[in-house]
Image (cartoon, rainbow over all chains, first blue to last red):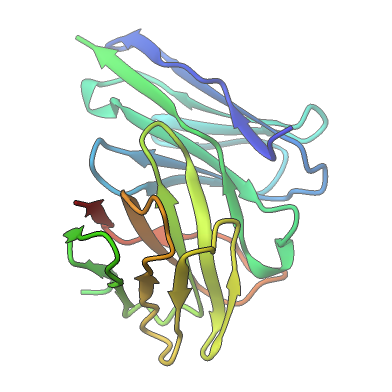
Amino acid sequence: QKEVEQNSGPLSVPEGAIASLNCTYSDRVSQSFFWYRQYSGKSPELIMSIYSNGDKEDGRFTAQLNKASQYVSLLIRDSQPSDSATYLCAGPNAGGTSYGKLTFGQGTILTVHP
Amino acid sequence: DGGITQSPKYLFRKEGQNVTLSCEQNLNHDAMYWYRQDPGQGLRLIYYSQIVNDFQKGDIAEGYSVSREKKESFPLTVTSAQKNPTAFYLCASRPGLAGGSRNEQFFGPGTRLTVL
């Protein structure tokens, strides 16, 4: 099993809807997870970090971490066409936690259509 | 302005040539990382460095080399031994050392390398 795995998508939602992106991980001791947004041809941009079980909200974005079930999700409320991008989930590399290494999922392409 | 810069933005390489990709940061970050991204795939770690004059191989280090002579700089050389170097190369940095510190990484704009 890959260390961090995302539902492959692509995901298409209408403008104004809630987009739900999910990620599962294999390392039970992982403490921190990150969501990056990557527009086509650009580099990833960190949009959410979550370090504890539960929800973390930042504007239209909510990250959820469930350590018991080993999944992390990102909800985007009131989706806008400008949210259309690839979303990457990242967690600590199980083999190198002490070096701050991250393992990235393969990404989920989100399209928000007007 | 604080940030991470990579140059060049686009790079074309002939077969058998070595090329060096630049990565500079003025964020005073300790750790720096090099990733490769291929179409439709996530990021794969090439090399990383926690402190000056020290670096470690990542998951796909073969055909690549790095140096870390200054805290601000972490250049990546793609050698002729790398058989399929065409990809998007991303440099990232992270404040603080490992252990209890936060693991957030921040990315530069990337270099797109094409082998002719």
